[in-house]
Each structure stands twice: as C-alpha cells, then as structure tokens.
Amino acid sequence: MAAAARGCPPAGSGDRALAELLLEFSRAQYRAKDGGGAAAAKVERIERRCLELFGRDYRYSVIPNLHGEVCAHYPRYIVLLERDAGRDPYESTVQVGKLQDLINRSKMARCRGRFVCPVILYKGKHICRSATLAGWGELYGRTGYNYIFSGGSDDAWADAEDISEEDPALRNADSQLFDKVRGHDIKLLRYLSVRYICDLMVENKKVKFGLNVTSSEKVDKAQRYADFTLLSIPYPGCEFFKDYKDRDYTAEGLIFNWKQDYVDAPLSIPVSLTQSLNIDWSEYQSWDLVQQTQNYLKLLISIINSDDDSGLLVHCISGWDRTPLFISLLRLSLWADGLIHTSLEPSEILYLTVAYDWFLFGHMLVDRLSKGEEIFFFCFNFLKHITSEEFSALKSQRRKSLPPGFTLEEICMLKQKDRGSTTSLSSDFSLGMESSPGASGSFTYEAVELMPAGAQAQAAWRKSCASSPQAVLWSRAQQSEDRLPSTGVVEVKSSSSSSSTHSDNFLRIGSSPLEVPRSRLVSASDRESRLEEVRSAFLASYSRTIGLKAVPPSPSGAIGGLLEQFARGVGLRGSSTL
Image 1: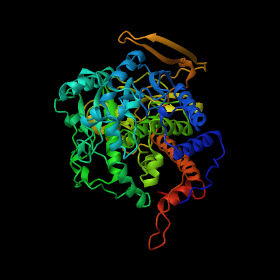
Image 2: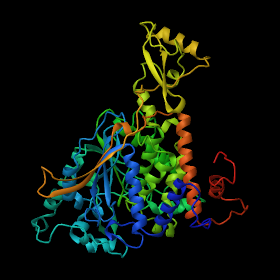
Image 3: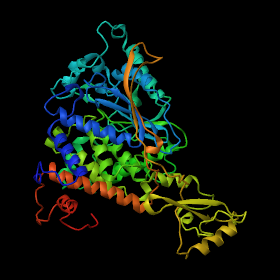
Image 4: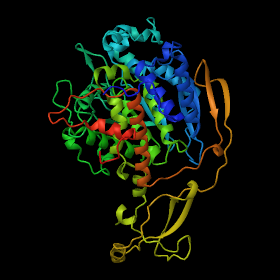
C-alpha cells in the first residue's frame, strides 16, 4: 500500500510530532558520529523531546556522545535513569562518572562497540541492551571486519577509539586479549548489577564468509560469564520478518524454520526461571511468531519481577532489530501496568519508545523497509497480543501474596466487608487493601474479607463466594498522598571520577518528587485500553507517513488484513476482533 498523504501529519501536536519522527526515521539512518548534517535540527528536536519525556518521571544523568566518540550508533545523549521522581522507593546506585569510565574501557568487548547500556529502570533494577560479544575478527580486523560484516560499507570502527596497534594486548595470545576486553565488559555488567543475560541469537557465533565474526557469552571458551545466569532464547532475525510482510502482515501460523544450517543455538533456560510460567518450553520450535514472542515476553517480565535486585541484559547480534523489539515491548507493557513512565500519555510513551529505543539506537529502518523486513512495524502491531493480564507485571506481584491453598481467580472473588473500614475483622481473617482508581485519578481503599485458614473453612468460603456478584482485585496498597507540581532543576556538572584518571563531563537532571503525578495501578481493562490506544496511534501515524507495501491479492480478491487494520486505525472502519 502506498503511503497515504505522505508528508501530511495528522492534527494534534502529539500526532504531528510522531509523524515527523516517522518521516525522519524512514528517510535516513541515525548515526551519532555523523554529527550535524541536513537533518540536524530535526534530530535535535527528537533528542530534546526524549529528554523532556524521561524528565517527567525520573531523575537522570546524560553521558555525552555528541560525535559518536562513545559509540557511533548510540544516542548523542545517553540517558542514565537514576531514580523514579515519584513515590517509588527504589533508586539506582550507579554513579554516572564511574559508569562512563567503565563504558570507555569495555566497549570493545561487544560487536560494533555497542556496549551494555541501561535503558529502563524498574524497581531499582537496570534493564539493559547491547550487541553480542565481539569475536576474534572484530577485535583484530576492525575496519576490515566492519567492511565484511556490513556488506561493503565501512562502519569505521577506527573512527571510534579502539585498542592502539602499540597496545601489548594485541601482541599477546588471543586468550589474554579476550581476558582484557571481556574482563572490562564483566565489570560493567556487575556494576549495573546485571545477573540475567538473555541472548536472542539463533547462532552460537555469527559467521560471515566462513569467518566467526561475533561470539556470545554462552560459548565463551574460558567460561568468563559463568557467574551470570545465561539464557539462550533464540528468536528469528529481521530477515524472517519479510515472510511476515509477504503473508499480509499476519504473524499467526508463521513458524520459523529451525532446521536451517546456520541455526545451532538451542533454547536453554534454567529450570528455576520457568517453573511459575506454565509453558512447555520443549515445544518452542513448533510455536508460531505470536506464541514465541508472547512466551519470551512472559519470561522477561517474570525475570525482572523476581525478588532479587538483579538487572537484566537483552541482546541479539548487533542489538538494533530483535533487541529493540523486546526492549520496546517491555517498556510499553510496564507502562501499561502503571509501573514506569507513569505520567506519560499513550502518544507520549509511543513517541519515546519509537525515538529512543529504535531511532536513536540505530535501527536501520530505511534498509529494513527496502528489503521488506518489517520487524519495526511488527513490534507495535503486536501490542494487540499482550493486552491481557497474563502479561502484566502486576499479576506476578499479586501471586506472591496469595495465601496457601488458593488461586488468583479465587482471591479475585473475595467478598467485601465493612466497606471503607479497616477495623472489626475477625482474628481468623487477614486484611487486604485494594487500590482502585477513583475520580480524577485518586485512589480509594477498601477492606476486604479474606478466607479463614482451615481447609474446611476454605472449602465453605469457596462455595459461598462462587455465586457472589462482588469481586475485588488483589493488589498491593499504594500511598495516596496528593502531590503538587514543581519545576525541575537542571544542573551542568563536571567532575572527576574516583575510579578514573580523566574528567567526566555529563549533565545531571534533577527533578522534585512533587513534580510527578502519583503512581497508578491499572486494572486489566485499563491495560488493554492503554495498549490499544498506543497501537491505534501508531497505525494511524504509520499509514500517513511510511505506509505498507502492497501485498499481492489472494485469488478470492479478499482485502488484506493489515489494510483493514489501517482503515480502523485512521477511523474509516469500526473495530473488530482483528
């Protein structure tokens, strides 16, 4: 389908900003190392908008990458989220000066210098992204490697600082070189408190022209990453999404061919991380694209909801196709639950994840569109498949609070008693506080009757509640204090890190907790409506700017499924079950 009204953004500042972003995204690939250029003013507006949206809910610092000196394909302003500016008690312990020093030391360890970078802060944990580990070819070949790996375009590893030819490590044995660069990478991971590493590669090592050009933690011969929890969750690369486009943008029934010669990475997940998910992981090769993406997302949400304070790293090969897919889905899912970016509206969180997670981190949309590899479109159209509570981070939090012998569904059938009161409950019962949205976003609290402890009493309780029309959601209590708006403070700081011999120049953004609206927990229906609103906004803007390529008509002449979705997205048709 040709782009509809190309260059004519829809009305409304949010829609207009998103349309301008998508147009810029579809015309040129972002590179921090390119600096100015004809589109510099547009890119600067995108960057400023991202910083403003991050600042709504978080105190953060910025690591400058103005000319790609840190990484040629990362944002010019790399954001380190330090603390939720709301009532969230969690705070990152990471100091930006030390982080910058570790980044400079470790960046050679990973493909294209795409180092481990924190992008989401959730309950004090850093969710990070990166490329996979660099192999022998990249460490020694540098510009020659990039020429091969990028298909002929020199991505100029030499433009970013690499190990000098005079560095003794280059004259030592391979193992000593890997000890050095991967040792710095491990220090960075530990500093960010990352414990879980999720590898999306379908290969153990990426091979080009018979050469191992990248590696991965799971096949590190020296077992340097043995102290981390490694998960091999192979997921099809961007080439597979041409099949998605060719099937009229239909992911249902689309199954990856796991018998291809280059596919040698089996699914491997520690049993301790799968027990609560009720998923038969042995069947992963029979899953279609929808089920595979759903199950992987459930796994990631379960990991970040664990009781420990460990962070998560997600990566594929280069870290700019499959990686932003799951980072974006995580960000949107947690936002839909009211757990992160709580003050952002649907149009704003959509803008932030498109701009920061995809555009500024170097997704090659122009190239992918030319090849029909529409993984970017798939990400946002896929939101319709994760609207239910089974993908909610709140669900697992609720399950941890369940009394023994009862299911979540039974808890949700609790009878109300002494509404509005927290007294006069029998000692045989425990008290749960329900936070439910009230007018103007406020919360009300209800005392609810829980079940008696005995088995017979539990059975009687189940029977009495089976026909009860009253039900409440099991949710953790939230503070209800009102907050007043306040103006954030911008501080430009230059300091020397205690762990570094060079000066660290970075921006620190301070914002008062009073600046942010209260955190909000949402119901399953709220989650669905929020994600559907994001998806609809994306479809409408995408159809007006980029559009979809025509799919050959079927023999029956039936209209393509996605054309129908677009018609709905721009308001030409009513909603349906699609």
